[in-house]
Image 1 (cartoon, helix red, strand yellow):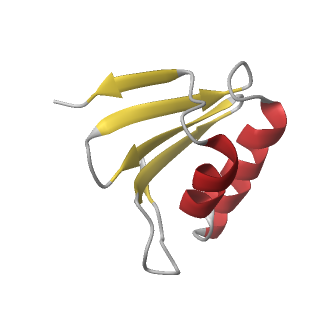
Image 2 (tube, rainbow, N blue to C red; image 1 turned 90 degrees about the vertical axis):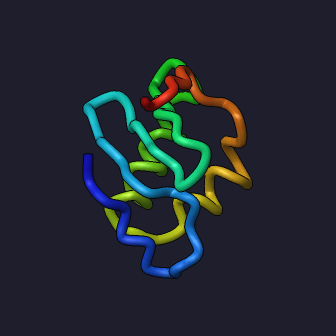
Length: 78
């Protein structure tokens, strides 16, 4: 996983991993791995999330405004 650059300095996103049809995120707290994919929340949203992850800016805000809890999987991290 890559560290999220957090260029604005106030993101809850800590790490991300981009796959062809999904993005996986780890937030600062609590420690879970969230998977967002083409099934849920859908291709357009996932592609926008990938773009923001690579830019290191605006990902957490986008999730809070447009995605919320619409992830496909939530896995605890030990």
